[in-house]
Image (cartoon, rainbow over all chains, first blue to last red; front, side):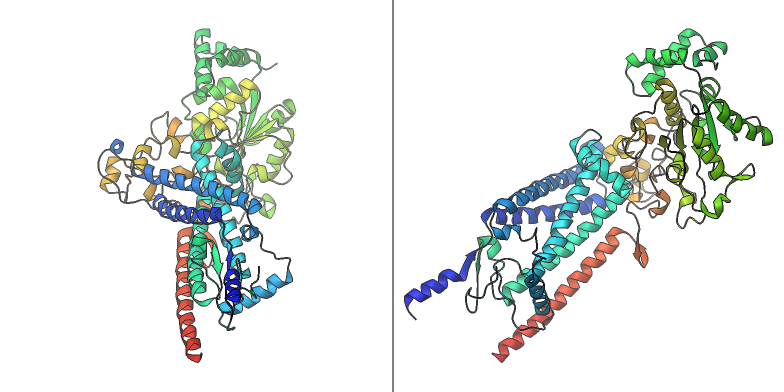
Length: 238
Length: 357
């Protein structure tokens, strides 16, 4: 093998997939979700009572403040992420728009499902997300986050009151849609669990794929580069 | 011609000075600026009294009980001086044939001009036979009166949302006024609560007769001035909530100290009403002040939202009744266990493959 061909093979083996803004968003978003889930839990089921005068304490106040701040970070981040889907590379659009109109998408989805059912020996290689990952991202993450942002701001608007932009944009019509505020709270809780289930699957699948698939996963969302094992990037799907 | 409010008041020996005082007080109670007092006075001096038909369907009469305990203005004044309550079977003197005749008389005399106040709601099943008034289904009486009225007031949670008689499985199909099929399309104002606060009821009537229109309503058809904020937003125990001081049990130290009732299921954070500002019985108290959480009686379907001491709604369709946290927690455990099992099988498979190679 000549030095030339080694060079070529090496340069083809890594592809730049996750641009810096996407990576930054991913980690900011992950920590926002972590903070939101923890503070949200303590809003729903508060900590044991603190002693002393009410005026000397602001525990619930701080927990709610953190929850709302993290909520704003998540929402603004998500808006930015949608913007980046338009201006970023093709991989930035994947989680928003699974190519369900392509026959190959469904065929490869079946293959990926077989890979997870351990019915096939080798997974396919992907630059971005595989079809199964794309579907899970789209439904269990994107729509769940949209739902949480809408219901979250609707409940926030209940506090800021009629006339505030949160109330006008979210609370006014969502309260009528859900019938009443308690239902809104209930579904906000329920979808939080959807996201927690998603996180479990997401982290597990990322670790498993990193070990067992034919491409890098975890290092890619840190560095942005995706590298391939066994046979380079010749048979990689875009 | 019907007398004006002012004429009736003067006839009852109320001085002009007292009358003007009353106008300013009412303006303040309605949250209007002082410049509205002369407007109220002008309306009262010039407008004929509004006739009101107060019909009772499936209900418990708690709305009427609340109404006659109004302190500002006194229910006596509202009933006798301000509005002409032509028919209300609970508090009218007439009875039997005589009473029922008044309905027809009012409908004919004030066709298109009277207010129809509904306390309770009609059952639709069995052709409305579960509620008979004067030998006829209430449903017929309601539709007839609605055809000729100017506007409808839905008193209480029964008329506004359905309340206990519409709770699952609702065998009589009790239906709130705005959902009754075939009802004349008249403007409806909802004044929910079980019962609504007396001062809220009289203030709504005062507003309608003074300005000849409904007060501003929210999307659910409730007057904004009384239903745009949650009990929680104006609760006097709110500082304990923000501080993180809660009643854990009804007999604990926190309960004695008057801490927040959030953890024992107070629904103040999800209930829109004026209890924490207007309060009850002339401003004496309200449920939270008496040491018990709000259970959201003025919210839509409050009987069907799980226990009165739970702040999350029960979700049906999972075999058992479970709330969001129970369902979600179980799902998370299942997903976590599935991931662990999958990981174990994957590890075995990988080890075997490596062995093969």
